[in-house]
Image (tube, rainbow, N blue to C red; front, side, top):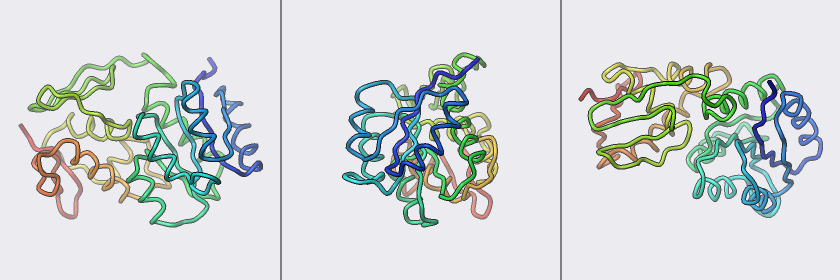
Length: 232
């Protein structure tokens, strides 16, 4: 059955628009195109969007500013595109709330895989296909069906990737997860991804969970190994 998810594709190059729109539409997605940052924000506000593919280098408003504004009002999955293998752009995009990134040039196969993986994890591509139970660890509680999380009965505002990362940790408190394992858990593979991006998402989680993010009590770093959730 074709996928009916809507993807907002934001890139000012016509060649990139054509290159990426064709395989997405062939996979059954509806593609809405924007050529600059201001148009992207207008289109996003005008209709429901399930995922945003966002180039960093854009006219009027750059992709980083668009990402920041989208994240201020929505937890929609965002994949950043960058023409430069620039760690600063990559990390800054993640800091501003992007869920994933891909560096040009990239293969169409890789691009399609990233899109499908993020939609699948976000639950927009296959709603209700795999019912799951709520899981708890101490004062943390996650409901995978509703994609909601609470800490001490207070709702947490998490992005899709933050939710998946926390769900992995909460499911096995005390277990040490390497960065590669966490990448695999979130996206289904760790190919093409820099393990240090996990550090950015963990930092965001700590800012939302910890009383003092600089002295974490829930998500602990295991030096040289990865991360674990403190056992209740």
